[in-house]
Length: 230
Image (cartoon, rainbow, N blue to C red; front, side, top):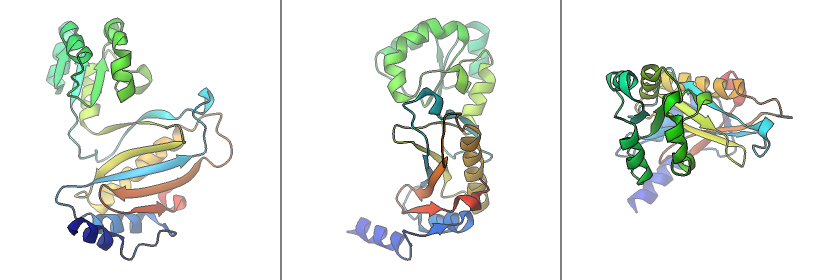
């Protein structure tokens, strides 16, 4: 019953048909994020693309100016000096054959997987395990790189990977309810800017069709795209 009442209160005064400017949307969502934990603020975007076509795929990474507020556990496939660099940069798990066996056994206690290029022969054999979870290292996303220290730091600092789903939807966590309104707005702008820059050549018509913002337990609000500066 308490959950029902809380949801009812969260939706009170919300106009589901209105397009909110960014400032009002952030303010409204923050004021209604009253769960007993620090709710994640999430963005969802419907894009005018059909990702079944290779020239309409939207994928990339963005470093949010204020991070995500989430603790990211990072695994790195590396050996020798590169393994030591990864550890010093703050990687949570570092290994080669030993890490392969752990992951292949189904244990994945991490959120991001990074590999040095010389490890991809080994890591490539984990495609069926890492791929479905979106954890497969990829050069285009900066997760296959000789500069493992920088990749680890970027992941820890709140770098967000994005990839459009079948229905043309991209979504991501862009902060926490405890963030200031200014920081959340900055992160939204940075994420939308990254999506705009990732616009594929094959996209036709309106690219940013719909953008909405919500908190983990709260209502979703439609955003006026013009107010984001997109």
